[in-house]
Image 1 (cartoon, rainbow, N blue to C red):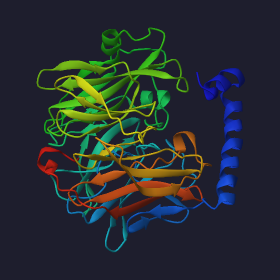
Image 2: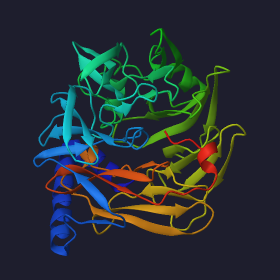
Image 3: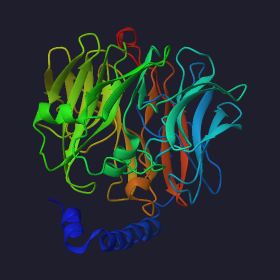
Length: 424
């Protein structure tokens, strides 16, 4: 058990939070004195998208921020003192060439780590999807960024939408927020607090054409399948649909309290066979990336990187000696991945290209992370790489407790993998 958890049990959450604040301000002053405060170093030409006094960010790394035409970026914009569940987030489209910000609309359903699950449509030009909240209900909306009008509203909020846009997958975002703060939504209280593994909550499949829905898996079924601790509370996070839209992965987690260590398993659901596969239980999986329709990169909280073959149910550990800390991986080429770090001793985060088969490492970004925003309000870089054009975008908070978005082009690797791999 780590020191943070021991302190929370001994001193309580409030006192531990005050001590954490003091520690983070010490890190802030150390960053100022060392000259790292505000530092942004990129090994490529880059653009910065920011608004003074505002948070400008995209969110998670498993959704592409750039349009198919590569000329627009999607952004969330928040007041500096925004409160999740109370303050709406503004949704903007920014022109990459001119840098002009164009407000599309607002959403009341957002989180610090994943925003409103904002994304481009793969089928409809200049259309976007995002989650919203109104009159005690979460849902997903589809909007046209040119006309700034809503095209369609779905009666469920989506964690992920299939690349073929035939269906979306939903879960209980209030329960997710309670058990994993920063990832769900705070507008509505979780009505399942007294249920460890509700038989009515789980993953819901929604047909985007007919809007028909059905529950694929419940938390109760999952807990029985993996023999989860009966006294713990279970939840689902990190749903990600495969490139060919025929299966999806997710984490099933169970914990005593939101701040205590959790146990989890990596799961695959085959939509053709309507079959659940428990792919991994030994490691505590942390982050993920599809690198083909049958392969996943998975990181562990111990900082290990693995490639899983979903079809054959095998895994192999990557042996690059530089892969020593957990990060948010993206597929770069047959030989390399892009990943990041959390703030290191100097207060800076790194984004790197690292070898899959060897010990190669190339540092792309070194950026200071303002430690005064921490916990669920922290700013991970969440690097997002568009393989066809080589565009890298990421979030950062180098100074003033304000988030910004940075983008730049990397070398495009042509290794034959463009046809067999899929970048979402």
